[in-house]
Length: 368
Image 1: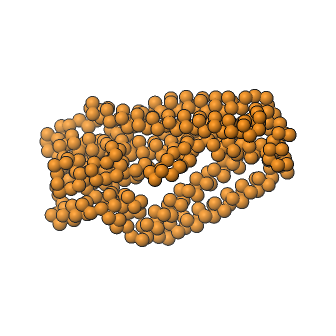
Image 2: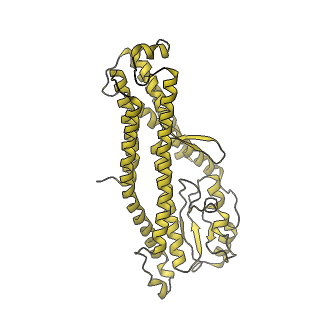
Image 3: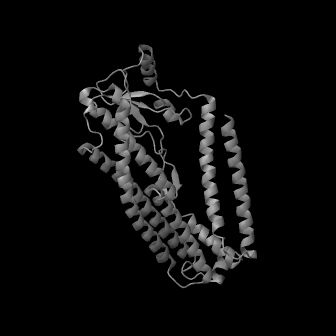
């Protein structure tokens, strides 16, 4: 079975970085004479060119997902539609649909391009710093230079530390909403951007379908354990996409993310919009939904808050596990020597501890 283009893109970045570092370390140990900065940058450039081809495939997937969502919305609303609405063909792209897809995809493409350039700058900066610290250390990785640099360590250990320094700099630097610096790996950033792009496409498809049906109400899905922002603004609340409807809050002046022009509350958000129709609902039910939709409070139970916190911790520890697995993979097929046995043992111990934490967190999650 062929992998989805989204999976292929994430895997491309993972394999590129891992193979690049593995080969970089291997050539240092062999003492191969070459310009290592050029070698690494060429490897990154090749992957980034391949990523552009995969992104072309992703664009088609985005169109398919958008149309799929429109048809789903139409099918769900079908029993409530007038004969005139029944005639609308939701299996075809309109000019509006094409424009929406282009906008969402362009935003995603720009983000990934910035990430790739950011990583290139990080790698160049690292080489400049290392070359200033020890003249041509990156290009002439001799035993004497590295040993003196790392205070008497063996060549094997010194090179391992040296490559570790490069690994720490193959990150895309971001600033969060509070102005704090963040470091994100390219595959993680691609995954985040892909999830966000597809969710925006689904929500946009819903909004455009509701407009075509000449309706104006949308409702957020419920997930019960979620972040504080979504607890206040999503979780079954109904919004109007028409400013004139005063019974419900106007989506684009109320909900974070949508206020900024994104059809999603925040990156990686799982809350999905669907069309909302009052037809067939009791008066009491309608009034209760209106009341809840106009009240933006965090009504999560303590148990649900704990579930969310545990899930966030699991994401962190699973990322640590993946990183340690990658580190240990470097030693597969490598002869175990006194130089690397201590490093391997340390990595295995850290991996064991991380796995224990993951098991405990999953156990707590099941108990809630």
